[in-house]
Length: 277
Length: 164
Image 1 (tube, chains in turn blue, green):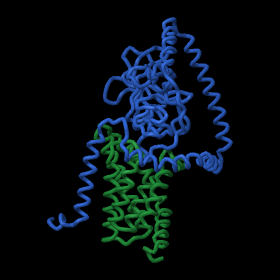
Image 2 (cartoon, rainbow over the protein chains, first blue to last red):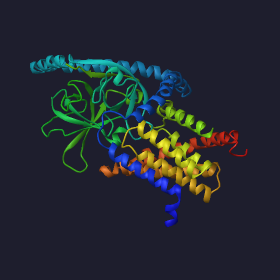
Image 3 (cartoon, helix red, strand yellow):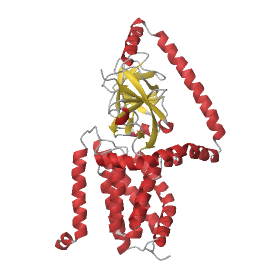
Image 4 (spheres, each protein chain N blue to C red):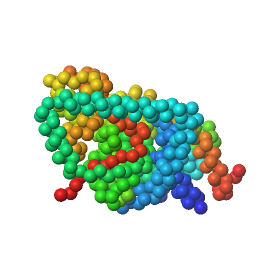
């Protein structure tokens, strides 16, 4: 044992281990701004990521061609567009059905959205592992973005910025297990929470919990943000209810929500910038 | 020279891991290039080289990825050191040994990761995680081991560290 502690490699290994454990303890705290070291790693790796992402547009097509799916992809795209269009129509109809109070709240929403600016950004990298649903965008503090700003696409809600560097920002999506979003059932105005779930996340789905006992949610109900919680503005479309299931260990129930955004194929997003008064 | 080649390799592999590799996903699972790289380096270069490369790769993954800082740094560091140690003392290198080590360490690492990031916080879907995340990733990692191992062996020969 004594010999072990006189071995310089063992002592070095022990020192590094203790150092990493201390770093772990320090960095588990919520932090908003990255350190210089992290910014440096970002600055070194980012040009390559941008290059690969740019070339991936061609390479992506190449792989799809070999999977004999180029035609299918095209068809799929057209159908997806059609579905989007139809979904939009359905949503519009739902909106029209709402009472005066709802129209009034929509006027309020418009007023709310007037306080926000949209900043377009490109997705340059995804999380390196298979565990988290996060990605990196090519805009950071230099473009005036900040932590806890909501990220959306033209279809609906994506997530929010959880860490930011000078020229990049990391976005956690609503299907990640670390994410929870205040939500609202469009038809009934019932409030619930949208949370990421490890199992559902594998299929690009998320979970709607804390559904009130009196709520009469049904399959196909549209879900949007409630504006509660402070990160997301009110009224951004999240997705629709695919299935309602009972909770395993309690009498309550939860809903499986299918987000409108396809997180696998996300390439361009908008950050909702909070206007400083 | 070797350090330069390794550093460039790590930067390129990191960029690949977060971008193009997403096009090669099977059932939503992608292989882990940096992980396989660390195991192969440890097999070819021993525990010191394995530990150093492991630490660097782990820190990079912790910085660019999500989750608590330090988990990957510690895991990759120890995988580099332990694989290097076992290989120098008990096994002789070779492609089959590399595949075996990547298989074993991928499963251990996946289980450790699940324990520290999910199980500890109340998630008990171990079977599902094993079947849908850990085992597919392990298989995918072993598939990409051969090209990475042979490439590294070639680089070592070119640099004059190893006889061809």
